[in-house]
Image 1: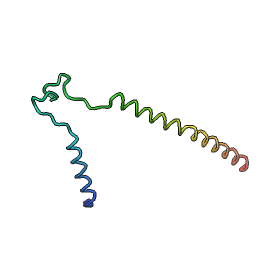
Image 2: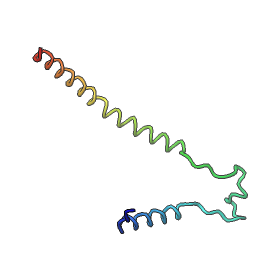
Image 3: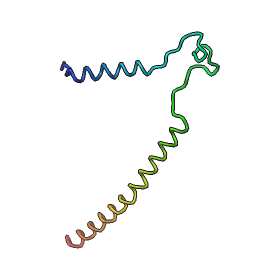
Image 4: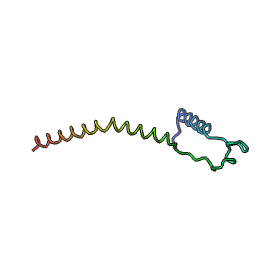
Length: 88
């Protein structure tokens, strides 16, 4: 088995440490703790704002990319027709 380079090992250590720091900790008796929450365990997912921002970025990228893609397709089809005429 191949050993990992020291850089990869240190990168993995730092990323695992960052994950441990990002995990929420709950103490019993604290007002926001899991025990006192009426909604049960906290659900992890996207909020509506995050979803709207993601969708707006996707729409913006599509609005920029589609016209150039359409012009690429039309120029490619024109080149194909020219090659067909010259080839026969």
